[in-house]
Length: 512
Image 1 (cartoon, rainbow, N blue to C red):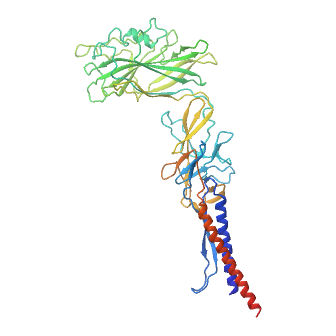
Image 2: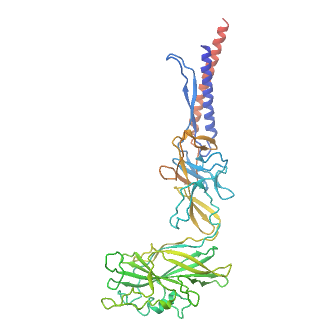
């Protein structure tokens, strides 16, 4: 019987010692970022008949508490906290595991520009897919990879797309005699004046009028060189149904529309004189003696609801081949305004443009080919409104700052003025988090019993959201741990007292 006392007491001492070790570890990590407290769970050892006194106690498991820790602000861009379910995904720098997982979002940039944790494990995420992304919408890949923030913008990018999101004032007075679209001699739509705006530099006479609205934007060539593109808008005429020959909705009836011209010019800054020098145009195969025009002109046709429906372009870059004022006669005996000889419907609201730019290194004339996205253009009455004019080219730049949204999208800011979404953080979760391998440093690895990693993105499908400039502190409740320590210490002392009593009984028997 005494031996049974001894074994039971020893098991109690061992179990209490393990419990104290767990409490000690919790208290030691009370200030560790992302640390999750544990508790020792005890179970009795029982065998034999129902009236057996039992065989003592054992530590059945050590269970971690994955409840949310307190999120405190740090003000550091690369500190990130997960508010809710999930783990940050890290590549394993040691190569032992395919991936490791953590709640500690204290990150840094290594010497190569990769986002890593403080021990050098690369943070995993979804890189920006440049082929599918636009300036307005970022599309990210669906495969995990390290997040490289330094490589982006090391190589300049020529402008290949511009987006014009502008409202033209529908109340602007137009250059025609009346709303039938009959042009006056002063209208920009006459042959002489059209030649003046399509090649303003080389035309014998300059257009005496002014655009109704203008805006400009910097674009880039393949070396990252800057050029200025200017868009000038001229309201030409309002064409009623009796003089129109365009059917926007396919109902068999011609529709009323408003005609605008937009003229695009590109110029380069002469740093010696401070003046801008116009660049040439190469939009068609018909060359001029002077080597090309200095402007591109498109006709924009808006329906009576102010929505852009058609974009027309000249068939030639030679103004002499674009008459613009030789209309046919309509049913009511008036000229049909939109019968422009030498003009063709582009069939798209995203026409192509090509510019001849002087290469500052070689002195040669190089082309810049790009498209102008015009589908967001409108013509509502009231005012001119630039909702957004953007382009996707840039010069080289260095990373100067980061911001991360709740959805884990990292926006990088560069010295060349760009601020673009470059990647999205990945998060993972597990069916049985307590079955993951504990690796130390608040990191874990997948195990057979934990189940495979459930990958996703923050703030989506039940995953937690990102809080930038903050860290999740340990979820250790210091007061509760001290109370548990006192209780476990008493258990340890009681088991030791049982062992002492057993020894006393044994000595008494030996003294008989």
